Length: 111
Image 1: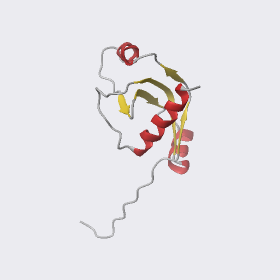
Image 2: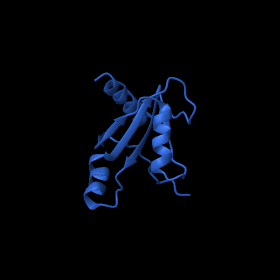
Image 3: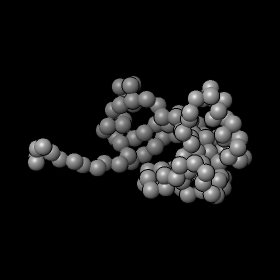
Image 4: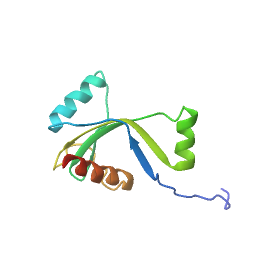
């Protein structure tokens, strides 16, 4: 193994959400997920009292890829969420980027 390998951590700076839906409860969100996934497994995330799923715009588009790499900017075409005080899905509360998303979503519930 080479000693001259450099590892650098560069978190994303911004997430652009194109469309969002606040579901009245986690069950409605789960029902929505099962319909759009067509019975296939789809990931729900839980962070700090919020359960959600998102659909990123793939970086296959040259403009999106440039935004991702140069600007550290992610684009999500859709975000569905609901309040869920106790988790029953995978708890990923340690993810700093998703912590920022959960904080933003909590503010959205108040508007």
